[in-house]
Image 1 (cartoon, rainbow, N blue to C red):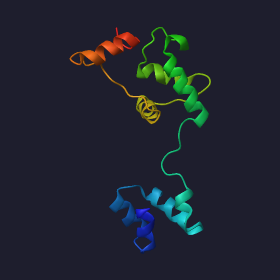
Image 2 (image 1 turned 90 degrees about the vertical axis):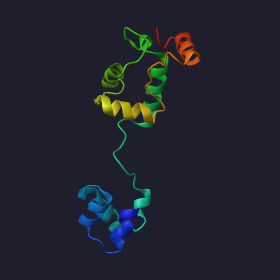
Image 3 (image 1 turned 180 degrees about the vertical axis):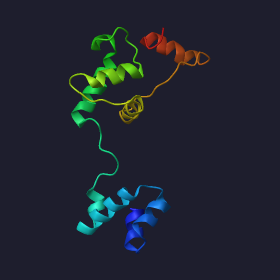
Image 4 (image 1 turned 135 degrees about the vertical axis):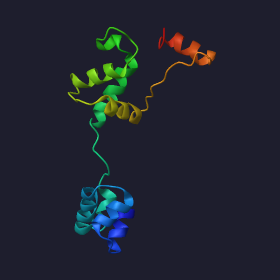
Length: 133
């Protein structure tokens, strides 16, 4: 929105890109949307599109909650490599890097944590749930 306002004030696309530290291609796209429809930037999704559709996100969440064993892996606790492998097979057929998979997991509400042995209550809970050995 800030970029579109700058463009409307007559600031050049390259200057907007420099000031906002974004690519010139992004600013060009903003200008094009604004040229076609002055309120178009409100309805145009920003950023890179999601790798998965909404239903696939729900399916992935359900599969992750069931654990690795119930999804054909040899251990129940998920590793990032296992999640990447899961995404490459049916029904997803989605090839992501570990970084992209981590971002997707974060979007879905998951986090990667290592147990803190000093936090005895949390450690005991994770052991009870089978998340750690």
